[in-house]
Length: 143
Image (tube, rainbow, N blue to C red; front, side, top):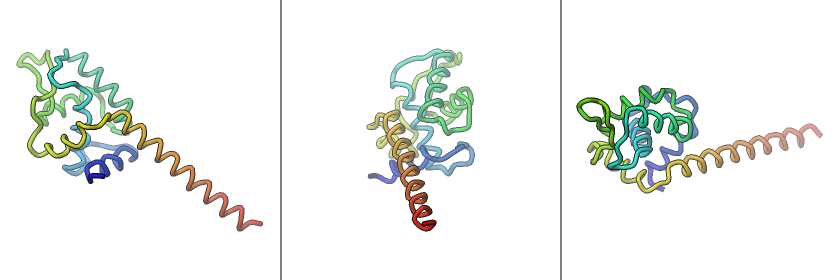
């Protein structure tokens, strides 16, 4: 699996991510992933784009500590989301910022929500297996 997807997996299972505390690559991964919550060329009113990002924050980005309004601003500032001069209509940018082209090419091919669900389910199962193994070891030593 490409390193970007490996890193995205790690980010998905982390607790309490603050975008401001991430390195440049990790910020790019999370910003691109959030941007993919909006289809290319679709236009959204401010309320609609904020609702979409709120849904993303409640699913894929559930471990990201920000709100939808702040995330929307970050997407605009990073040039992944564009708004018209009046600030009323938002669209996903036609091109990705150069520094995130590679990240985007990896993530665009994913069903991000399904990927995030799968990664988190596997992590829950891995932790449960570790816990069972520890309990079995403890039970075996106590006999």
